[in-house]
Amino acid sequence: MNWTAIAAIYRFEMARFFRTLMQSFLSPVLSTSLYFVVFGAAIGSRIDQVEGVAYGAFIVPGLIMLSVMTQAISNASFGIYFPKFIGTIYELLSAPVNFLEIVLGYVGAAATKALFIGVVILITASLFVDLTIAHPFAMMLFLVLTCVSFALLGFIIGVWAKNFEQLQLVPLLIVTPLVFLGGSFYSISMLPTIWQKITLFNPVVYLISGFRWSFFGTSDVPVGFSLLAIGGFTLLCLGAIWWIFKTGWRIRA
Amino acid sequence: MAAILSIKDLQKTYEGGFQALKGVNLDIEEGEILALLGPNGAGKTTLISTICGITTPSSGSVTVGGHDILEDFRAARSLIGLVPQEINLEPFETVWNSVRFSRGLFGKPRNDALIEEILRKLSLWDKRKSQIKELSGGMKRRVLIAKALSHDPRILFLDEPTAGVDVELRKDMWDVVAELKRDGVTIILTTHYIEEAEAIADRVGVITSGEILLVQEKEQLMRQLGQKQLEVQLVETLSEVPDPLRTYGVSLREDGRALIYTYDTNAERTGITALLNEVAAAGLTLADVQTRQSSLEDIFVGLVSGDNT
Image (cartoon, rainbow over all chains, first blue to last red; front, side, top):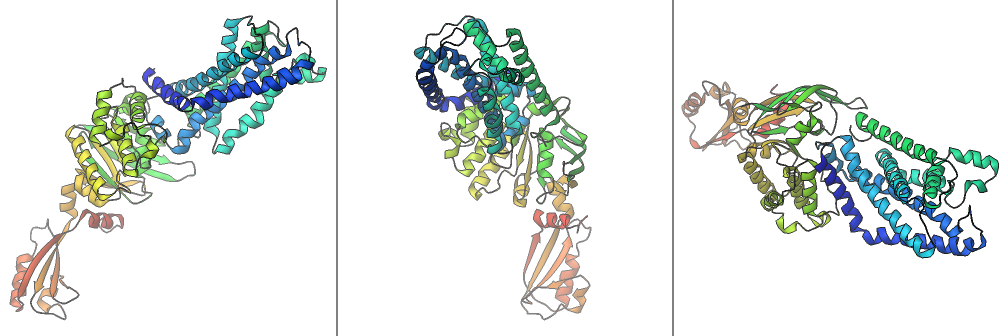
């Protein structure tokens, strides 16, 4: 394993993050604050508790997941797409590194950025609502796994994309709807019966449910299912990336 | 000397069906400078890209320092530094970080002293803290070289290193190449500029339509294929070549004041003495005599158009 190369890629990617630190930091703080103003204060004050949790607190795990997933995808997809776009990918392809090392570097950096933003949102949220975390260790595990798995998905999107429009397409048309419809702002028990069934096909439901369980001890689906879902999703993405590098699809002519 | 790079029957056909390499065989010796000449689309860049791992070969094999580029890619690629044709650099990163990244990517431990030495050698030291987007085109090209040198490669590929570079910088780059050669680095460069090959190469390879036409010592190539022209300038003005001289294949310069005789420098007898005797016998008075060696460019044009093959 070429650990020096992994560290080099990781550091290079993180440097991009630190160059725009204010933007990286302020953007999630501002959007989270806005969500709390709108959903927590304006709307939430008219909603009773959801599953025994104040609505303002109830939406915190979903809000964190929403940002973490989109940030992990956009950072990882941009991270690998940009070298393709400007041509610096030649260096990566001609270096003595294998696919796992490249993925660890890029995905590791994208996941770190997403994790950072997740923690920032958590801290911001705790300024607005009373938060107690029932299972802190599980909370971190879900958070890290989500960062990693969605960064893997982002990496695949970055390799697949042929232009900037495609780069935005999957997050915009697939991920954001799945996250919004995945119980970020509601419990699926609040849905009509038929939608409760349909929504179980949305993989994000399992992630948000598991993550929410780590905060409040209650969940829409069993926690084991959530772990299985995120583990399976991670493996699926890893398999796809392994295939990409084996065949050189959209990377190596 | 041992071959540091060995290419055997290398073929590359792209997805669209275009065959860019049609069975290339080439051995490159350690420490030499090989210039690969060829017109656009000849397969120069594909050859380099395949050796370096950017494109995958369709068939054939390549070993670098005895390591197969596919089966033992880590060892093979560790020996190679690549300076691509296009200026591909992360625009927002600093020169220093960009070069340091390259060293790390090749698995080499941090060595600030070495990077400083490389940047100084390439006149980039003052620009080390500048973002790459702030640099001129020539400076960016130097950054590409610095990146390629950052991990101590034994073989350096320079893909059209001086394309679009001004004369002064081109000469500077030739100096850098000469210095690298002194350090024992094997250099393979592709170029459009024949004068570049003529100035710095030990051997010259000519590639066209995905095939290597020849690889030869530059001096030997010029000797073998090179022709010389003798220009006999006259006091008189002639309207046509005098009869006795016609058998020599002599032509008359446009202004009629000189006879031009083309001869092979390798021939046992060049025929110059006999020709000059005939000139004297024809009663012509010599004003001056000049000879001109054909350049690599003449040879190259002749080869690619099929005159000498």
